[in-house]
Length: 588
Image (cartoon, rainbow, N blue to C red; front, side, top):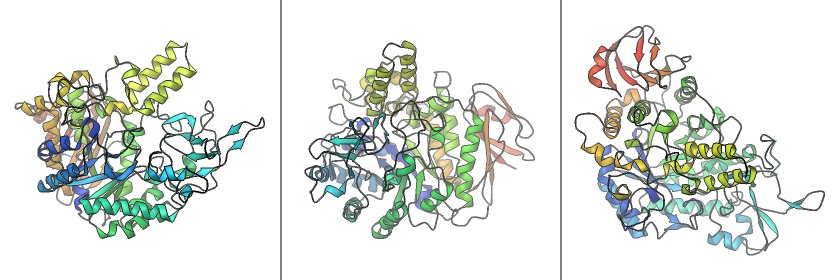
């Protein structure tokens, strides 16, 4: 390991960031919708868990077409979440516990009900017309009106990414939904306004931002048709022309220079569609002057068919995990960048269901396996609400009507239009929803075994149904356990160990120990003073692993099975791992 900047200590590198999806976290007033006072109520729980930074998904004013990611006022709070006064009180309480707040910044697009867009669409001569991306229609050979190009909408790929405006007789670009028009970042007035929004929240007490799809803010200005990669669809993924566009780095450097450089901040960019390592380092390299880190989606795309849309089920095994994690760990160490470590967020299904076996027999072991992996890898650790108690996907018995997310609704509608009389195709679509829908992460947090899992009052109706397993899978039950480590206790201890041994786990070198094993993902993490081995069996079968080579384990110190039996595990040669078993050992 010849890196120097990678090893430089920074508070945002060592922090544990906990993501709150506010609608589903805790309802304080019995209206069935989580809110800001509900977050404030649980700050002691988060502090005790080991959280340093709280990232809250959007709570700004919004018509809620996409659960708050369609913002109508960046400087005010939606009444369903509370008031600015509630936010100020929450910030004060967060700071009094030695924690920090990270806001969600959504500036690729706004709501179509934002005052800027209402002014923009009022007339082709509006002073804000060029705050958004407007284009005249094309016409086919029969004279039928067509969108300006063939780009597909991201949250409904059967639809065009362009929305027709009857009043002004032009299309506006809306990559996500018709209710989310894209801002025109080519316009300096837009950029200045965004800078002012950042200052508003930093002055109010926020310590940084998670930047939603920030790499989509610069588009190729000729707006060409996308190549045909999904022949069955009229509209095609156009990310080649709107992800990491020609002026992205200019815009990010401006944000750093004009705003972020004047505060001590944490910044993380959501950057979908990007695999190019040079592009990633241009954003997160120690000398880049852009963002602290980005979310790399390689691991959460592991079960997507390459080059296809998200709603696919692609088989994978430990070799895929080996390849993905090794690439990202080595990239950041060797090129002085910085990683994010995560398996879940509000846009992904539950990790215990996705990567392990979420049955009653294996759920706890799978959740602890993923905790062991995440708490020992280099990068800033992100934990999603409910992950720390091993919440899982909704049950297969739930019908499509239970799914509330616009992406899920669009997917189900598309399949019913394509296969109205094909029970097999519709059953597959339902299965894909249960495995991959964003709704899986959006069911309310399961606090206890009372009605609605303690998320809201007994007589209220939650905005989304609580998972049926809340009687047994809940925070209160796990906090009461004393003899065995609950999933919650395993996470808490894992975070403590991560901080105690940060030179190895946060800043240490990384070496893959067996790239070809179909079941086992194993690696070595080392600092100048200690070396650790992590071995994780990503399968439901017993695995024999002989990847230690010349290493000898002084002691296996942690595992997701009965830890009193760790002393019996081989410390050299071949190590046997039970189904879904993960172990952590200190090297002699």
